[in-house]
Length: 330
Image 1 (cartoon, one colour):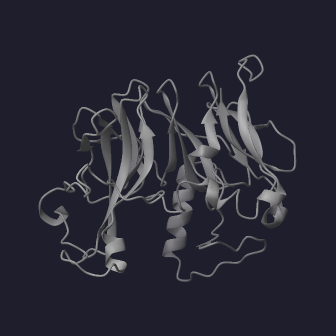
Image 2: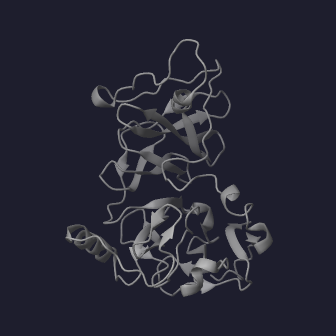
């Protein structure tokens, strides 16, 4: 069904050049470039403290205190000792909220991210995932009984699921590339995810093989014949973030932006807010800057629509020279 026949209104944000200097980029993102953290806020309890983190016994047990426990001047270790919350996601019926809680393991020199639930009415907190690997980006199933999330438990970033009632998480995807930016369709049948792929590759395995070949090469030099060379804190390696559609019941991932020399979502701050499902759950709407070699000095992002089965290439929906983003259907 076309967007016109669906009789739904598609809202999106348009950012003009005058507002791009600071209001349209960093301030619109609720998460930094790292997929393990979002906006960092302390998580208080009714008593004013933090609930104890439940982790597996043995090597994954609770880390020792980072900051002194007695009275002392506030310092850097106190900042490290503060847990952070991100990916705040209400359940479909609004009765509970899933979120990611990150705490610092100073001895291991890393952060641990797990998924928690809090009840809206009584504020009851419950830790839903416990693992040394990172768990993040929780997304509810339409019936509110399952949480899908991204995790590195398998050695790469893949989709996992866990019953809200409590049970061991199970792996959903097993693709040859790392996944990020998860979103579940309203009918619960499809996941939209992003992955870094080489644009000229025919499939995901091609990207994996090329990366393995590069890693095994005796040298690490790279030739650049166009900008960007380095985007903020990341060197360009020829890959683009592409939007994939994956059937949750099983099946092959479909590259919805195949052949597009553009990042979906955008770099460096873009996330799942830059794409959404169509009202019938049969297509995806996303924003992209397909500007070719003029990309470094272009701020022209447009909205595109693509069928989830990949039966036709993306269709451009907007033509103005400003930044069109954050599509949301009424």
